[in-house]
Length: 76
Image (cartoon, rainbow, N blue to C red; front, side):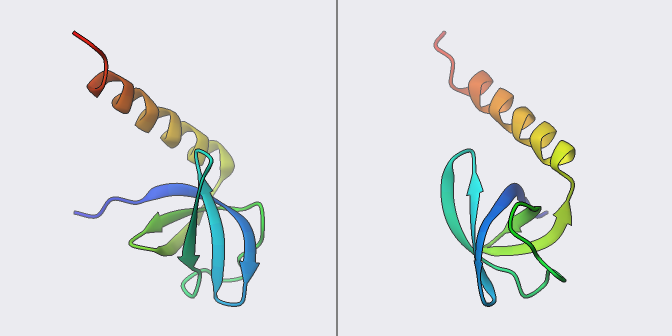
């Protein structure tokens, strides 16, 4: 099973992009993404953008991840 997270492309430098996930910046290979553009959302897995996704889906998924994190880290 693979886990990928939605990330927004902030800038592109050749075959590598800087992407953001909830404000954290990461480097990502974009070789598998056709015509990647700044401002688009992608699924990030193991340091690579593996497919484009729309902004609504990205935001909904990040909200779910944040809810799960908050549930697991609340004080008893």
